[in-house]
Structure formats: structure tokens, C-alpha cells
Amino acid sequence: MSELFDPKRWRPAPLLPRRDPRDGALVFVIAVLCFLACLTALGGLAADRAARGWTGQLTGSATVVVRAMGAESPDIAAGRAAEALAGVPGVAEARTLEKEKAEALLEPWLGRDALLDDLPIPRLVTVEMDAKQPATAAALTQALKAAGIDATVDDHSLWIADIERAAGIARWAALGVFLLIASAAAAVIGFATRAAMAAHRETIEVLHLSGAKADFVVRLFQTRFAKAAALAGLFGASGAAIIGALARLAGGGQGLTPVAPVAWIDLVAVAPTPFLAALVAAVAARLAAQGLIGELA
Amino acid sequence: MRYGRSTEVLKDVSFALAPGSFHFLTGPSGAGKSSLLKLIYLAERPSRGTIELFGRDVEAIAPSDRPYLRRRIGVVFQEFRLLDHLTAFDNVALPLRIAGGKPEAYRTDVAELLSWVGLKNRMHALPPTLSGGEKQRLAIARAVVNRPDILLADEPTGNVDDAHALRILKLFVELNRLGTTVLIASHDEDLVARSGQPVLHLEGGRLRAFGRSLRGGQA
Ligand SMILES: Nc1ncnc2c1ncn2[C@@H]1O[C@H](COP(=O)(O)OP(=O)(O)OP(=O)(O)O)[C@@H](O)[C@H]1O
Ligand SMILES: [Mg+2]
Image (tube, each protein chain N blue to C red):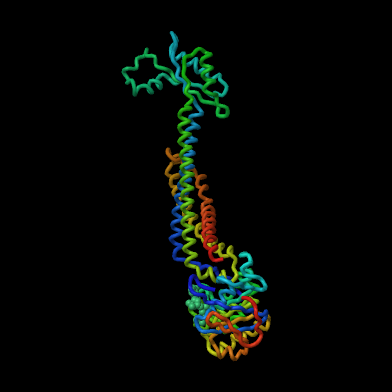
């Protein structure tokens, strides 16, 4: 073996041993943390998309309840209301809901037999808004009043506010969990750095006495843990991406599972994980190493 | 100087090593030879007194400048302090690497030096697989590889036979001839006598000088 050693081909070996028995456990822990962080991010994106989908459907439409006045029949009143509403700028289409459908909506409450023909069942008019410039509820109410129709406009704003509030909470919760995981990862890395520095104390001292600057030594540990974290991030992100892909496939053709719609594009969100993990690890290892090196110099 | 709250190991030690001089440091075991060397290579700080290196008061040197000072001092540690996970070649290349040299520029020098100390066939070996004498020669090669201005050697011939000891002495003399200030702590009276170099004797925390070329001063 020694005869084969050729100084002309020699390259400097890593100053810290390439393999450390503790590295396996560290990579595992960081990978699990990255996996959880990615799942949180995917969940957050899905919740966001779900909320946007629901509010989008709701903002695009309004429901108007028309009550007949005087001798006018409910159907005629509804027809007039639809006409009046169609003329409002920002309304794409206004349609009366057929009597049968209105009855079907009431049936569960009143029962089939109770639905007498002369019972003044309110008629519904559904309004589809112009997607670009939707009409406001106030504008619709104004138009109905001008036409002398007794009606209530429901533009679903109550629902929308609820959904948006829930989505907002989900977003903040996701961010909170994400930060919590990042700080847990940083703490683990800091701990591992201190352990590694204790294990390699002799190496550090020899480097120090040979004239290595503190930063030279700090960088060794910083690089080492950044690499380990990048690898862990790759594992964690891949795991989360697989789960995300399974959710997407399980969601059927449109990928819109009712609770958390995952899109293929969402999977891209896990891509920066190795870099983020490396960054967090580098900073944590750097701070820990600088703290300990300070005592030497 | 003292360690922690113990009694003073070095009490009355005043000397100056002229640039380019060659001295032996002798004294009974536990006299504080290694401690004195540690003060010079900036591993310990004196509890009182001052140390000047290259004409500068050590305490006044900014921490950011200390690495550059250390690079001008080669040390052969009594316990070698080789890095066990690095090959002999990598151990010797270490100071050059720390100083920021390019591998292409120094690897032939490293190989030559290793051959010179008789480790031509052990370049790729890890220190734990070397004999005591081989480790010692490796430690010496590492200490001299970047032609330090000061060479401090702590018992550099403790583990080698006479022939190797003479060869090592020759290396030190050669280095000294090229301008390096040399200070060798040694028990080897034969070697000290044979070299004919001046001696600093440490005993009871006091330093006495024998032989030529010693001038008074603060240390
Ligand atoms: N790190 C330390 N902490 C506390 N005491 C120490 C330390 N190093 C050395 N000493 C003490 O300082 C004294 C001098 O030790 P030193 O190693 O300098 O002696 P020495 O002359 O080199 O001896 P030897 O010839 O056996 O190598 C000894 O009494 C030793 O016990
Ligand atoms: Mg000693």
C-alpha cells in the first residue's frame, strides 16, 4: 500500500474524520424535522387553496330571496327580480330557481304534504357575477328596491369572512409550527456541534497551535453540519413529496380532495428544504463553534 | 507561571534567545521545561512576568494576530499530538495547509521531508500504526516543514536510537544554519554534550545558563 502512495497525486484529506458514528442519528433527527416541516408547508398550501376555492365560488355568486307582494304571483315577482338584477352592471347572469327546486329545498323542513300550491313559498334568484368586476350586494338591493320588489340579497359575505378567518388561522399556525421545527433543528445542530467539538478537541487544539485562525476551525464544523443537514433535508423533503404525491393521486382526476387539495405544483415548495436546512445548520453550528473557540484563544 | 492554584512552576526565569541561536533546555523531570516551551508557543499565559516574541510583548498582541505568530513557531510536542485520523503525509502537510498554501506547491517538499526523516515508505500510514520513534520523526517533520523562525522541540529524541537522534540533531543544526532559532528540551546528556551547543538549565523554578552565546533579558 505504501509503495503505491504517490505524493504527486495527493489531495488534502478532510481535517475532520469523514465518518462519525453520531452522524447517522443526527441526519435521522434532522430528516424527520424536515419531513414534518414539509408536511406542514404542504398542509398550509392545501388549506390556502381550499379556502381560496370556496371563497372564489361564493364571491362569484349571490342568492336573492324574493317574496311576492300583493296580488303578484311569486313566479312573476321572481321573474321581474331576475330581469332587474340582470340589468345591474357586474352581473353576468340572473336566473330564477324553478318552483320545484325551491320546494325541494324546503321539503326537508315542511314535508311533502305541507307544500300546498297556494303556500307563499319564497322564490330564489341566483345571480352569477361578472368575474372581473362583480356587483356589490348594495347595488343589487338598490336595483330591486327601484323595481319595487320585496327581496333580500345574500352575497355570502358572512361565509366568506368565516372561511377567510379560518384560512388565516391555518396560515399562522403553519408558520408557527414551521418556526418551531426550525428552532428545534437549530438546537439539535448546536448540541451536535458542541458534542463534535468535544470529541475533536485534540484536533482543534493542534490546528489552533499550528496557527489556524478561529474562523478556519469554525468553518470546518459549519461545513460539516451544513452538509449533514442538506442531506437530511433531501431525505425529509423527498418523504414529504412522496406523501404529497400520494395525496394528489388519491384526490382523483382534479386532485381536489375535499379537505386539502394538493396540486403538483405544491410539491415544488419542498425543493428549498435542503438549502434551508443547511442554512439553519450552518448558522447554529457557527454560533456554537464560535462560543467554544472563544475559550481557546 | 503557575497552573491554577498550585505553587509556581517557573519563578525566576529571565533570558533572551538571540535570533538564529541554538540552545538546549535541560533540567530534572517536572522542572517545568515543557511549561516554559508552552509559554513561548502561546499555549499558556504567564501568571506574572512578560514574554516578548519577535520584539513584541505577547500580551499586547491582538488575538487576530496570534495565529500569524504561531505559524512562525514550529513545535515538536513531548506527546507528539499527531492527528490520528490523518495520514503521515497529511499530518506533515497540515501547517502548510493552515498557512493557506496550494497542495501543488508544497506536496513535493512534504514528500522530501518525510523521506529525509526516514518515513518514505510510511507516508500513507496513520499515526496509530507507527512506532514511537516513527511518530516522533513525524512530529519533527511537521514542526519544521514550513521553515519556522523559531523551533521548539520537547524531548525530540526520547524515542529514537542514537543514529536517528544524530540525524535529527543534524536536521535541527541545518535548520539553525538557515536562520531558525532553536530551543530543544532534552534529557539526552550525550546528545547535548555532543552538540556542543549552549545549555539552559531549569531547576527549582530557576533558570541558569551554561556555555556561550547567552545574553540576559526578560522572558
Ligand atoms: N496542565 C497542567 N496542569 C497542572 N499542572 C501541570 C500541568 N502541566 C504540568 N504541570 C505541572 O507543572 C510542573 C512542570 O511540568 P512540566 O511538564 O513543565 O515539566 P517538565 O520539565 O517538562 O518534565 P518532564 O521532563 O518530565 O517532561 C509539574 O509539577 C507538573 O505536574
Ligand atoms: Mg516535559
